[in-house]
Image (cartoon, rainbow, N blue to C red; front, side):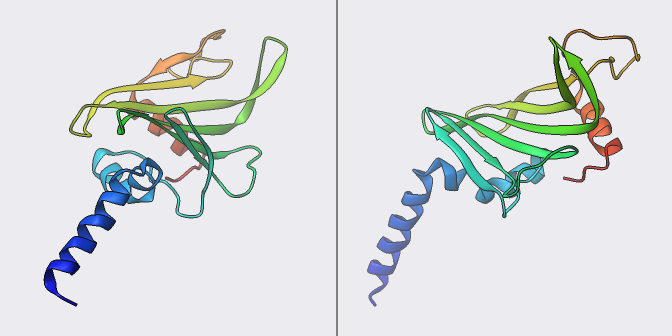
Length: 157
């Protein structure tokens, strides 16, 4: 095969991947996630939503209880805009008459260079994880606090 044809094929295949957000921001983006301190997308997870700029992956099997529940990517103008990682803990809490497992969300927003521009972590549960006081609302927490809570639940990511 002639060298210019090989180069043309490489460019064509590379451009196909760059236009496919599922591929570009799926497991192919894990190296970036590792450098940025984000949980990696598990290679055995399935795509459960791809609609209107929202892409979500979840484990093959349905989780009930403690675990890494999903990774959701928001795309704007064919670039990553945000990422949300949802974890469920072992303790239950009740809100508005419904029982839930405690949850931690580790989320971030990206700039045009695909670097994190802002973090937004949240804890959902009956008690404030920082001071132990009763909580009727979601509690904003730092990345370090979110990581500490998820680790205390025995979840490795």
